[in-house]
Length: 98
Image (cartoon, rainbow, N blue to C red):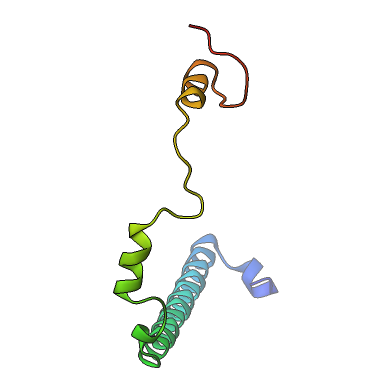
């Protein structure tokens, strides 16, 4: 494309040439995507089979014990703050209209 022969060709030949080029480009892109997916899957399998996942993270008993206790962010409910939130959209200070 861009050669004198290209510019001298009729429109049907130019369209046919563009279709051939676009088809080749699409095949190339699909092959690259397929190759990328294959490599990603191989890497994922290698990572997952290379280690025992039971050795990483807490045991079931540890998790059950953690669930039985309130976490560090737990706070008791302040009914006045909840009422302020409903009335004003904020739990910060101020009075609640009765």
